[in-house]
Image (cartoon, rainbow over all chains, first blue to last red; front, side, top):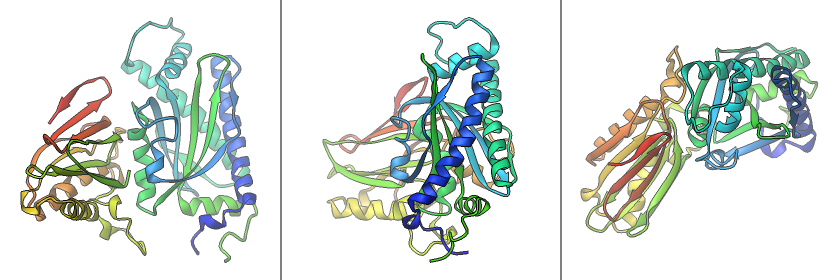
Length: 211
Length: 154
């Protein structure tokens, strides 16, 4: 197989990839809304091709503290999927899920809260992957969820390093979700380079390899 | 990430949110020329690529960093180093190769520095949290900030 060259990522491909993100994130957002019993909106997914220097600033600053849930994806495609939100949003999610009153000024998360967040991430990313899997007929098996509450740059270094083993860019589909108050966060799908090709092929875009 | 920069006192260099990457700071204490490399991966020779992205790897990145500080007026024989980062951001239970990249990055940096005979004066590495670092070539202070932890200087 030839290289999937980014210069040739025409707007047609981008539209297809955006649409995949739309379906995946749409389902994930619905799952989230259902879980929280509230209305959750999302932006149009963005397909991004980034230099490693730019990765840290993806979500409004490398030093921003975020709760990140990471799942490795295996099967017909390889890569990872992440669910990220600011600490405040993560608190809202945890409190709703655990049906507890928000505690003011609590900085960190307890073990139980972290595992609740992990589970939220698991469910939502699962629905993202399921809908994509149905659409493309490609098998996508997520790992168990891993969580870190840390600087965005540090969290994003993990997928960046995975891409770093293959090339000098990171490519992802990013979707922002939000509600009408303080809840917001991101779904980020990061298939590796081979997998991008497989996804496009599965959707009937067959000329990805041809010069 | 995958970047390096040099500076001369009284300026300082910062890199935000080191995760599994390693921030290698070197300086010449006499001319006070210093530099900081933010390396992502341990070994350029493990990667099959037509061209090497020099600052991305510990081996090539540190060599380039040394070349640049020397070009800016540092004396190679006087160089000293401090390193930070190399965390394991997610507690992967399996612990497979790619997952332990923080440890491997750190080991690769130490090896390269030893090879170049640059003493490592201090390090703050490993564990599972991100670090923002600020390096001052004037004093050699390497300030490390982490979420929920007191700031420290090594």
